[in-house]
Image 1 (tube, rainbow, N blue to C red):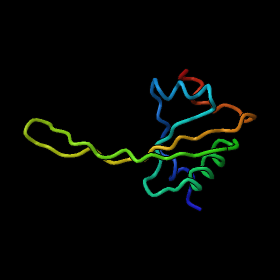
Image 2 (tube, helix red, strand yellow; image 1 turned 90 degrees about the vertical axis):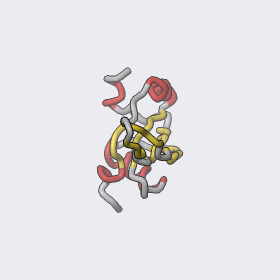
Image 3 (cartoon, one colour; image 1 turned 120 degrees about the vertical axis):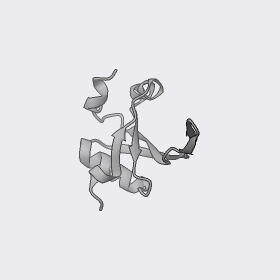
Image 4 (cartoon, rainbow, N blue to C red; image 1 turned 180 degrees about the vertical axis):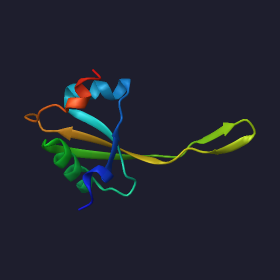
Amino acid sequence: MKNPRDVIKRPVITERTSEFIEQQKYVFEVDLKANKTEIKQAIEAIFKVKVVNVNTLRVPAKPKRYGRHSGYTSEWKKAFVTLSADSKPLEFFEASV
């Protein structure tokens, strides 16, 4: 198994994702090559909670311009993690709400 800290990069905290916290759903940016099983094992290892479901989404690169120079943003992967009803809420999401 990969190191859990290499699979989970950072939490995605936005106005929309903060609404999911009431439903025990959390959103993370994860490694592009990580699969759902690795994401589930990493979340359970880092936060000591029980994960019920993992949904993933690849966010494509977007074209961006800066003056006459153009390029693309990086492609990244997003994971929607659903915790079990008896799991405790994740503590660093509590401070943002």
